[in-house]
Image (tube, rainbow, N blue to C red; front, side):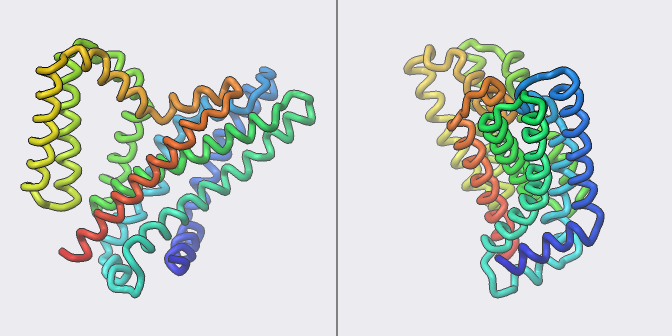
Length: 287
């Protein structure tokens, strides 16, 4: 894993990808920091971070699109898959390399609360807590981008797919507000979710029997619950969608509330998609 990690970090800074990513992120953060915190006097750095989460939609696809797709297109993934390392080592090594590049951005942002404290307007404990949450949110977005890159050999498809997936996640609360909260609508929403889960399983395993079985069992259980007690479904789908939003979970940090559930969610989200990426690569190893 260490060799893969070093190779990936060097590749990001041998090419322009790492420099462009860091420069773009730092430039956007700096602009909002000057406008919101220095000029307008907002006391918490979390205000700046909450307003620039949209940059993940552009920066994360740039960082992750080549992580798996380029290896697959150039057939260099065969060298990694036949190397004396496990698939998990390869995937985690690549993921840690991308986190390192993003971590450079977060380390540079750590100077912002110090600048604010020079003007007497910084609550450093809350500010650094918000930077930690911002870092973990970025790690979650990077994990999803790596997973999408592992599904294709086209960097364009990987970048567009990552952009679309992150856009849905960041707008999840807005999307859920447009959906019906009635029990029947919620039931149909969960059925659609089961179909999506089945599609993901098929992409990972190419086993349509397993995918179909998961969908049938899941929809069957949902149908049984709906027939037994329809009131359970009232507004439940909207609640579930809202809980999946990456950006909304950052809101408590704006109010100086260290939201441990958000931290756990970001870490869990990252772990799940790193695991799915490993499964996608593992499938190719034995195919």
